[in-house]
Image 1 (cartoon, rainbow, N blue to C red):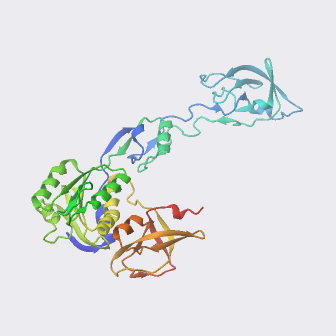
Image 2 (cartoon, rainbow, N blue to C red):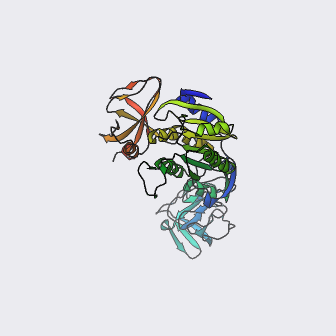
Image 3 (cartoon, rainbow, N blue to C red):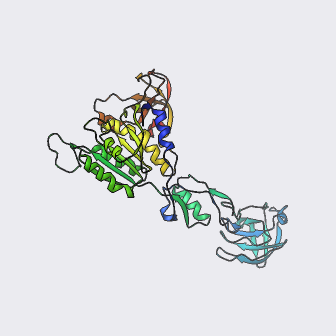
Length: 409
């Protein structure tokens, strides 16, 4: 197991050891939010017929080349067609048919002349305007053509994309099955929210926060609060192992005599990949495979736990979900005050955003409360390993945790 490695190396090792999960076929009503597992080609044309976009008269466009108010063209009315009628009517040059919006275009017609440019007199229609080929028509296959690739592997399916699949003839689609996650919080001092808090105890806010992040990316999970006892930890891991695809533990990652999770995993013959990363916060994080299943040992300190989760565990979960491992959008912003890092480390700094004169500014957070700083941050500033400081006034790329400040009124 590699120790005290750089952040980029840790991220590369993490992503190279996780893969997208199994696929499943789901009906349309269950596809929203899922990741498409293969390219899809349209099974039908949409629309399936050429139809009229207006009430009027189906015509042969070349019949009306010279039509105007002074020189109307006389056409023979041979019938009518309305929305819902089956295709089949045919017209020839010199003929026309009454047509309503959405009705199938008669064979031989190539345009529809709006009714305001016509005057109907029993079996004849006087046309007072031209109608070029394609006028007032919705062509067959305009939105989707049979055999056309209309969806690609890796798409995150939103409602509009699901609607597109329906229009293309699908009632279901193959998607990646999200990984099953087990979250284990350790510590004799930790209690679940809702339980009376006695002196020396604290609520399991780490556990709650991890689960909130999992919910935000559409992942289901199981949780367990386990005391600092090797047998209890090993039992919790073993019992959850058959039905779990990835483990996240909070606390006990340092590896001291009171930090037991790594010792338990070693006894279970896990494949440790790395422990301790030159990142701040988040240094004590460990990662490995237990029966080929990813296992993240996250630190117990709230800020350290959160950053290790966001920068290492979350990208892995997104990849296992079938998606892109980058969750947060980035933006360029001007740094308002200096930020200090540590040479050879990757530092992540909580920040808030300001939009001033249509310019995005980023302010490093200066709150004494770690939990409040975590809760109020709108962005993260990254100080790369090869920088010890970034000076005020520079434009830097930031991770956006919230976006309203990026869109000025």
